[in-house]
Image 1 (cartoon, helix red, strand yellow):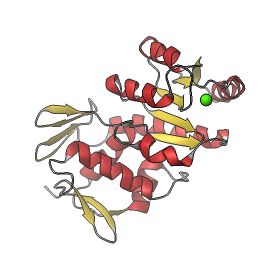
Image 2 (cartoon, helix red, strand yellow):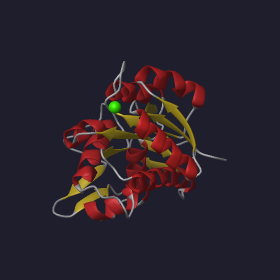
Image 3 (cartoon, helix red, strand yellow):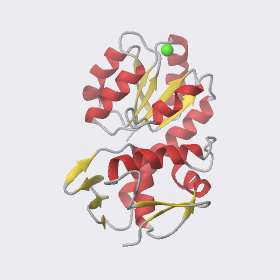
Length: 228
Ligand code: CA
C-alpha cells in the first residue's frame, strides 16, 4: 500500500514540485496550503508522515506541529528558512522528528522520508516485545512507553533512540554511532542533534532529568542505558 504524506506548504510552486517528486517516488500526497487546512486534513487523511512548512498563513507551523502532537505521534519533517529554529523544532514542546533548511535538495528530503518510514516499520520488529527498566516499560508491539503505568508521548525519533539504547543495556554508544543508527548513514546533521534528543528524552522518561537513572552519560564517549 502507498504511504500517504500530508504536505503543508503555502508556496504553491514549491508545493507543486514536491508533490510531483513525492508521487514519482510512489507516495500518495495530500497538499494543504495553510495551517487551518492542515489541521482539518489530519484526522480525515491519517497520513503516515507530515511535511510541514514553518511560515504559514493563518496558523503557523509551530502551532500546527504542537497541535498535531497533542493527538498523534506521526513523523513530522519541518521545513524552515532559518537554522536558528532547529532547537525549537526538535525540542520538547514541538517534537518534530526532523527538519530541512530551505532551500534544500529534494533527493535529500526523500532520503530523510525513507529513513523515517523505514525506522517506523522496523520498530515493529524489535526483538523483545517488552522492555522493562525500573518504572519504565516499553511495549514495542503497541509502540507504547509507560512510566508507572502512565503513557508517555514520544516522537518517532525519541522512541527509536530509547528502544535502541534500552535494547542494549550497558553497552556504550558514541554520538556518531547513535547518529548512524537512528538517523541513518546519509544524515548530514551534527552530533549535537543526538544530545538535544537525549535531553528531551530524559525530560520525558527520567524521574530526575538532571540526575538520570536510565539514560546515562559516559563522559568523553557517549551514552548508555542502565544495566538492569
Ligand atoms: Ca511558507
